[in-house]
Length: 339
Image (cartoon, rainbow, N blue to C red; front, top):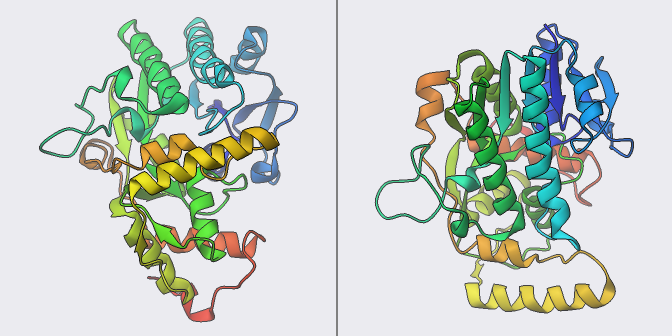
């Protein structure tokens, strides 16, 4: 069987490609000429050079393909030109869906995000039945992913066998970029986190998220969404978990949201003058006002999704950053034990 993985050079996509190889496949990946291939350089995968905005390259990439894993996304909380994010995430997804329909693929797994589901609502935790609105999406990235998910859901209604997965907050090895969440972990490990804001994330291991993609392809129902998540944790709990692993105190100062927002505005202004990406993106601060908690039980019941403990996922992430030069200090030997 031939599978196409978009975003295979990225964090989640590389683990999807790696898992397919481990199962005996030689998947095909769509990459740009400028893609950083460190995450997959050791894998026997076919490479098609192209772009989600280039229809002919999509048709070439889909020739003979049965399964598509559309993991690629423009994941940025800041951009000089936000229209790029919408073109890559919305128009690119629409193009690939159309090309996949023409190619007659048997299964199309679209990687969305928890952000299209986990919106503030009274009562129970948000789940796949939660129908958010575009005006509830904070920032260009979330809005673009919301619109792209709507494209995937529309294609499913029109008959394309699309299954949507909504990863929560993946952490673990292979975060070369690193992701915005990875930067939070790296900053903490480097001692650059004097305080924390009252927010929360659902933590899940990236390799388990990759496994969830394959489970969705094998067992998922077309047109359905599946949250691929682990444990709901406050940011303070995340830092305390990491602190136990490395013997570094967790920050005790809770930063009021208004202070964090003010710092974001100042950093944004300075960054605009200097022409660089802000270290405190305003979108990230605004997102932090709401805990991204969710009920992820549907994937367990329907797909058999069983992620490892979130504490272990955080440990694996910290260890990988340490071993790959992102952190100046080393993990103590006893921190490498299973949590």
